[in-house]
Amino acid sequence: MIRRIGYVMVLLLLVASCKSKRRVVSQKPKPVVETQTPGNLNRDLPKDGPKESELYPLPANPGRFVKFPIVNTQEYIETFAEMAQYEMRAFGIPASITLAQGILESGSGKGELTRKTNNHFGIKCHTGWDGEFDFHDDDAKGECFRKYNHPMYSFRDHSIFLSSRSRYAFLFNYRRDDYKKWAYGLRQAGYATDRKYPQKLIALIERYNLDRYDDEVVRGGLDTVRAPKEYEDFTHVVAQGETLYAISRKYTISVDELKRINNLNSNTISIGQVLNIRKEKTK
Image (cartoon, rainbow, N blue to C red; front, side):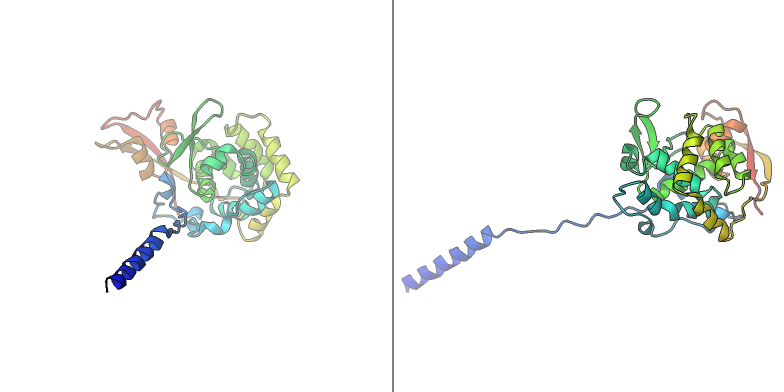
């Protein structure tokens, strides 16, 4: 009897020993791709529209646009051409210009800043940016650049950036497929400090036949010339707790535009201050 109990105890010890040596392998959770828009890209559009941009909200599934890694310029074009055309329909910026700027500013998607931030157009933080950001050496050391969690948001912010600032307004009076005027106009408006910027854009467009993407959008029904804009001018009295950025969001104009109209050198405003507002009329 004692011998039988001993056998049982030895058997139990062997089983326990085997269990203790067994490795427990746990699967790592799959990474989640974040698709929320940063900061002011998620702003509400005016309800008394509609504008062209309201007819083209950001796609719910951005993954269909992008494949990684991007090897060369031709792959960059193939990856982002549809996105550039999407933005052309929404805002009227030639797809060829958007693609050429993206190629130039991002190094065809391989530049250090673009790889860190998904920023394809070198747009800096500027006043009023409340999204993510990162620092990168550019004209000066450690400058603040906007950061996006998907390239699609960089393309949309590029459209908003150009269409919401008064210094670029004259560009939208050009034919939507006139990439040469757009290229020289961007330099004139101060988008880039490089004196050869227009020639570089035009060279990229003609080398890779990027204007064919403009032609496709125009053939799809987009008017080549945008109807002239009309504006209404009125004033806003600053209330307690209001900031310049909050007021800019209320009237869907940029902080820079508010400062320009009112000759402001800083973001400081006071209760009771009267601000001039210039807002595009909606039909």
